Image (cartoon, rainbow, N blue to C red; front, side, top):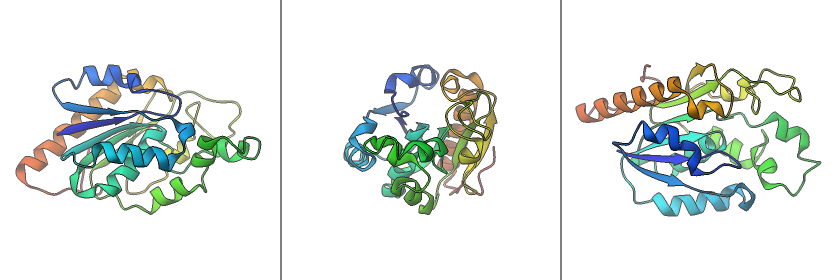
Length: 208
């Protein structure tokens, strides 16, 4: 198994150092990108880097989870599963509100609910075990709906075919959370066990 990490907006691969320290026995690739380059340019660059990698398990944080879903759709035969953390599969309501004030900000345009990356991601079927950790702590006063300080709980729960597991953490501290590590390790163990037995799983048959 090759674990591929995809960080969130305005972050770097170093944000996964805590999680990676608990998964050190696994081969890993850390993908880096700059959100201001635009979603699709970043997608192309990341896809080129991993297009020949097999037995992929994605770990993505926030926007990195949207990238992971796009990459998994392009490499469906090579992907075993994924855990994403605080990923807004329904897009960002905050971005929707400010997109007209920041018309040249690429990430704002890319993550609002009606953007092409979000709409396309929601049209992709999830063929592998896929978990999204929903972070329930934290709050931004600029967002009227319940949120983790950055994205809404509703957006994190948007996909009916992605299993959600709640963790009492905010959007960023989840990357330093032992419960999140436990969920990731359990999911990897289940995927590896089923793969060794030659049993195919999808996101509906997978149970936490």
